[in-house]
Image (cartoon, one colour):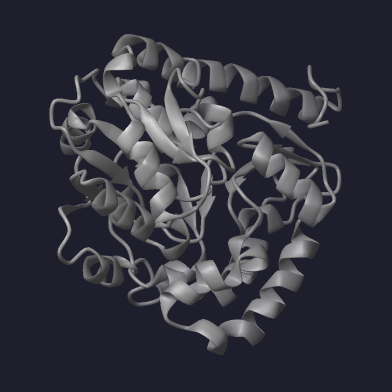
Length: 349
């Protein structure tokens, strides 16, 4: 997603707390990047999760005084940047900061639990104040726009996050396995996919890495589950094209994986909540399971019939969320915000 925002403004520098060219690949040219003082800390890019108390100051210290328009993309920190009073800041927000509304599910997964609560309380206070600063919010889904209104008392325009359809090729699902593609974090509910697939007798492959991996491997003992780790684009393309079905087991802010699966011609089974309700058409591009339980997911898997889904129709659905329509919509809204005009559509009603 960030690549497409950066492409819209090719001459603009990119400000970020930390930068690791090995991890970002060709998303943005290194010469465009301006990092914070955190970049100089030993091991910062490896232990970035533990630097949370330092991010607010890092972003506030960026000198953006020479810019008339600031465009940020963020889940937490970048909305707090400071800019000239006569400038504008359009903030593309992917969620309300998870430490603010889902502490136990998010922070607890890093092994710091209640020890971090005093620090998190201070971050929550900063977060609410920082949310007052952007000139306007643009949310990646109606779900997130509703959350922005509920937690920050701000309206947000909606531009659905783009899916890089060209990364995927249409497959036939010949691998006869279910696939989860996810960071391995507690709130992603990957353990639900493990248990649900075991109940349904469906082989499961998991793509991704993260701090919850050890616990998930323990939960998967005795089941037909394979952990594939982090894959290259080519490896992911093959895994996605060969999947019988992709599974989205948790409630997502937006949920890009269903669209990536559709771009590969594969249907999806997702928990029926959150952003997935905006990207999956039940009976056409996938199915929902109603309760966040292994039994509910297993029931959906048993009833699922992949042959009813046309791979090319799934691909066409994903293309509606492709980079080109995203760029047109996003650029139009930012231009309107910058000029003081009203964008074509009102904020979420």
